[in-house]
Length: 332
Image 1 (cartoon, one colour):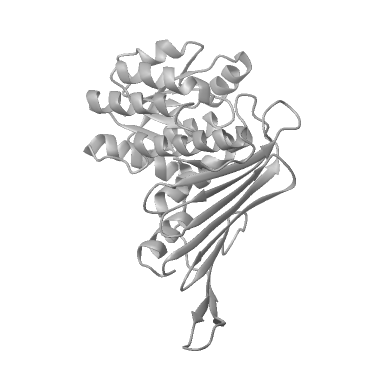
Image 2 (cartoon, helix red, strand yellow):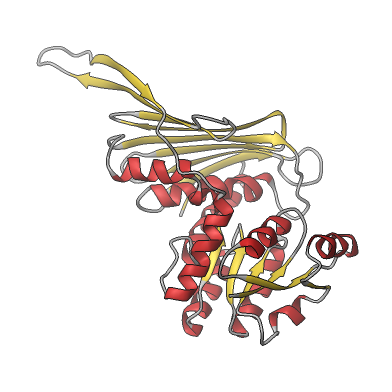
């Protein structure tokens, strides 16, 4: 499959490196408006055509698929142009700036019989694959909560706030793990440096009494990537910064019983073993791009398709509405 890549900033080099080394794919062209980034791209990939014009890449008859790795406000126009020119599209998260844009692109892809995949890289990590298996196998029991802390110092974005930058990771994971959309969202936050919120908190109410909380922050002195998922049978901790044993499953829980004539609830705590399951190795982005190539080749619909990206954008839009209302509950 012959690729054109638009954008060679922070994430673009990773996309190009994986596509160049992936069996069954070839990068024909890279479009990048920054002269410095173009020079870096040409030095790293002397055999690839590096140009300033995204339109030239999109309209090239030799290219089968476009990877859109540019700022979120450009995703809609670039993806739309790529689809209109008969190209499959791999687009960086978040999918679009608005849900209306996302809906239009999903419909356009369906009309053209083209694949759109949104870059939700974490879904292809060994940790999330194992968590998905545990949830599907009911190893945790009915889920109670999803609690994530995703904080670091920088990278400050100039075109979106910290929610739109960091929260899509957790929102895409939740969308993958949990059945059904959230019913309501509360978000609070504050901006300190560049007019965008750089600290934010988001709470999502899902059906079946599942609650989710996300803490995202560009002003943390330390980098933290920790997620807790609690169920009635077991609970797990996923620390993505751990070199080994990223995932730990705890056989711990709470039982509540009530006897006739006894008005106080009887609570008993169960504490069992902890184990760290073996996780699938390999770079998540490589696995994801390989899956994209396979889906285009076989006609299979990717699970992280435009519709999945659209669901994440709807959650972000709802969170933004709540944020603007200083934390009011907003129903989806």
